[in-house]
Length: 144
Image (cartoon, rainbow, N blue to C red; front, side):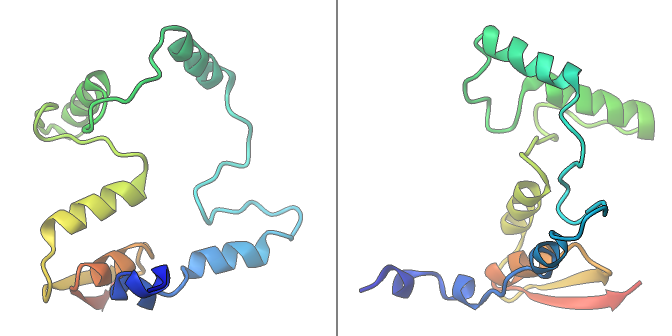
């Protein structure tokens, strides 16, 4: 049996992301600022480069806890408390992900069951639809 025949049927039915197709279509246009994929159009700032180098020199190049660095979770908790007057426990209520895709996927996969209905306000972040469908749920769109 070929590998493609073993693939999850829901995955096989997914269509390529419109934003990826749009990004490819405009990539050859000079002088535009693409805001399609969250990729900056500027070089990495020097202080960010220095922090990365310092982490490597301090042997901070291993896997972190799966929920993220403790200091980063604590900083996120402090920021939310200061900015929004909320209280979140960095040990049990804050999770750091490597970008929106992983966070949204993990959150929706943890909550959705086959047959669930998900109300999605439009316009939408395109990632919601395939994740909802992969989990066997049905998206319902509401214009906002």
